[in-house]
Image (tube, one colour):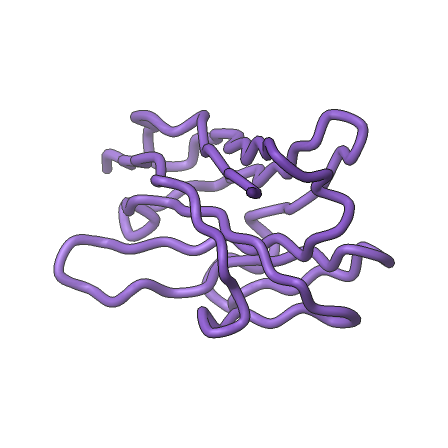
Length: 125
């Protein structure tokens, strides 16, 4: 069974950077599209970014385009989300999730079937 665990969250200052990792176990990550989602207090969970499994197509929410970068290292069974130019509104619990989809990945939750427990990102102003 595929299991995902996020790490790398923490406290950052406005304009700072963090790198989140999503490590997989149980199955090779190369077989999955991976998405990153976040949920801020009192808000619904939203899709942030995703990377497809075969051709590494990427997708970003408008709110993070140009600031966040997703990448994958299949040899390490890990997907990364580089967060830069952080803003207080980026404060949230960040989750990674896996989907068995092909082609361009989407940011809707319904496609994703395995989720990690999340990692907290807090950005101070």
